[in-house]
Image 1 (tube, rainbow, N blue to C red):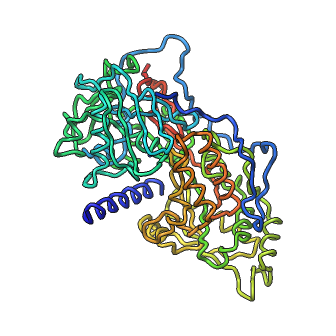
Image 2 (spheres, rainbow, N blue to C red):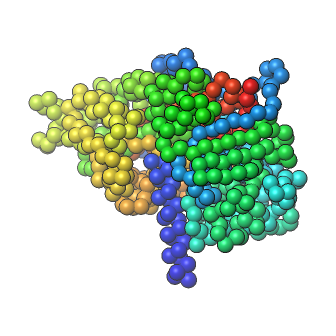
Image 3 (spheres, rainbow, N blue to C red):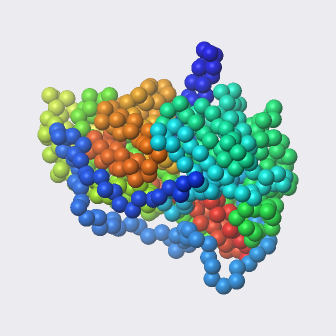
Length: 570
């Protein structure tokens, strides 16, 4: 038993570390709430809350995108007669791997489907392989009903046994692959009949709807094989729009799945070529070896140099924030953290990035289905910042901000050579100078920066985090995640009220979305008032394609390849 517990802890810890590095993934479908009915509450009677607007604030002017950048259209064009047939060659960046969780994102999207899918417009969960699901009143059991008539690439029908076997394989304490799925509180998965699978947890766990619902489903014969999760080419079998026809050390060759449950595919074939880094992929595009190449945040300057490229931009589901370490005595006072938030000129930060980002006031994108109404915000207000500092006992003397004769001096850590974070760090230092605060800018390579973040050895930390698909963000803010070395609560933030919100959100009866969204709204309002971090920007991501490529529509929530089954070529 002790060995099993140790194995389970190691597995959970590995999943958490992987998550951090990636951030630093018979009832009706979920109803999306259209209004937040929860009344706004003060986060604390003793902490002045930031300004809250009763009506939506006017849009902040943003630098326009270059003419070659198109806003990402979510629906596939329907004008005229659309072409069918043809092949498409796409570049993917990374190392070739046969680990099912380490396959390129486009290959995973092409080969495999999940029980649920993400709405590309607002991040809500929708049916996919499961036509319906039901959550028990205690939120500890989820029952999925599968679509009838779905088949794997080898012709075998999709059954509940396949789904249960997939869950068991990925949740096994001895799983030897890349851990990307949260199996917290998972106990078992069983097939009630050929089309119904039931998943049980040791306690209520609503985030499982996203983490387990979005897991790629494979045949039972594959997930129970001795080599799983490493797959041979013959085992790369899913229910997806494409199926593998050939595999080399540098390339996946995929062909149309004629029996795809969503209908006939426009493309005949898809080729995915692997490149070791982004410059190599862009060079291949310039040499007309590939038709499409993805672009990560910060790669706008390089992408716009490509000739014959139609660049489609979308918001990355990523948050850039300045984390305040409350272990630093001066930052333990929420008034100081609020002052540092008011002193940030966010539109100026946006200008520094050539408009290749958007402003954020919360920890999720405004289009997210559960985004709260009338959130407080921190407009640029140096006078307000100075007043809050004075209220906290800090006075300006000899050009420096001092308290009890000691100057306020803070170190700001950022990742060196990061095309987004490094320039923002320099600008933040400039913005704090008028307050009399001395900022010592410290840049480190990625391994050193990550180590410092996990060890909480900083005053201010500028970082980028992936935004989870579920409402649950306790990994970042809950008190028990304030564990140096492993926890993601880097700033040592603690608020018992927030801990209560997270606990309630995990076990919400039937995981009712409106009720969970109301709790989420309270967590966001509390975070903004407590100011453990200043939410700044969401960067852009890109797909650069030739004009012959039609239908691409990268989504902040569903990813770049959510509608791969609709892509076409002229």
